[in-house]
Image: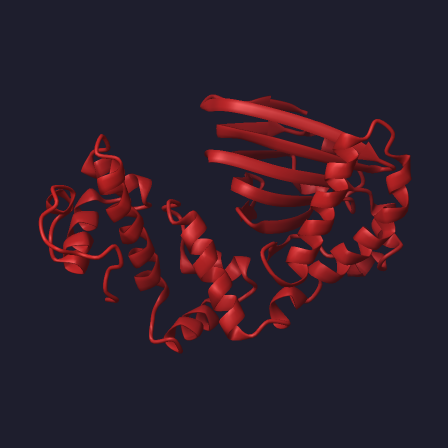
Length: 288
């Protein structure tokens, strides 16, 4: 495996082995392409489990395999010939899972693959905590043999968490909405946030996503716009050195003119007027 980073600002890589499981953390900022030709020699039914803390992770050979902050993804190793990570900051924990280790927990045809689930609630949150704890112990020990008895139970958790979207089904609609709102508040800066990505990440159809917001008298687009405008209003006063254009881009707006139009519609004054202290407006824009 080797890494190529044309726009890489920083990079930290750490790996540890527990039995036949490999744990690897990747942290940094900028963009990075990782080539993994050796994976082509591995059994096709092996798995990679990726826990994303910050940033985005994708595989050019498999466009549907895309994960970002607070998600868990499971895919077959043969499909990860190369992958890319990027973001103002990125932080990932990846676990290589040999097929034989998972076969104790489920028959081969029941071992899931190419599934992405939230890591912030339900079974996904429980699995994320277990994997983080096991990795932390592995990185802190010179001899990891004492951790091997924990692997079968974690393997069973992986099978249960990624099978049948149980992490979503055990929740009420209100819990899902709150988790989606928290996710948007943490990732508002990402100009690629969309109903398609959110619904896929949370195990919903786009129609279900629209219905959840409609039942609250709201919409996905309106919520995303309010969160971004609130962050923009805070930046306008807290970072006077940032230009209006940069404030817009920092908050996920791809168009400066649209940002100014949306800001004035929500607050009644322009971003420049707001920065100059004109008017009496709240940091919380009205719903529209």
